[in-house]
Image (cartoon, rainbow, N blue to C red; front, side, top):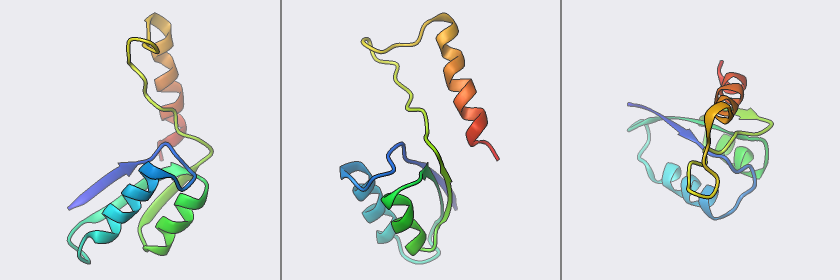
Length: 87
């Protein structure tokens, strides 16, 4: 089974460390993981696991909370950044 993982964080922190441990815990060939993340320490560690990875300068983090919600034309921000990640 192919699975896509997207990480918004390039440095090795709490969330990226959890994802790294999660991916390394799967038995060999049980899933075919694919990771998209910014350049940094996390990308280097994922490459050591021999997982297919696409690195970028940055990935826009979707924020639709009450404090940082998108309105009207600001929804185009997501479209603008998603085009840069597509391959």
